[in-house]
Length: 158
View: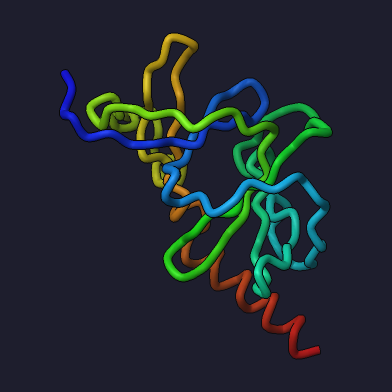
């Protein structure tokens, strides 16, 4: 059943798994460049990146989601808008901008619980498989954001 309302999604891959993010939360896709490492942050935060005069954290989604394997050479960094801030996420590949009918977005099943459920906007069934749609605003908890701000603030004060 079509609602007539459409959503555009930027689709990408982590390992063999397809993911997507709402196009309105994606600022830019960059070639992967090694972020500057920052001590005292979780291992899944790859470091920080200077983007438009701002220092933004780069989340390694492969590590955040516990995906096996090695990042390919053609990895990308997706810079996302989260409120008034930016965050970036490293993904294995970016594929396309897909348009879906809003009725296709199904809520996450009950098997996803806790923080994992927070990351998800929903699932979209496509002929090539299920597409996991992330809610990028929830990739970092408020505690994790605070920890990042404290570490980055302490580094700037040195």
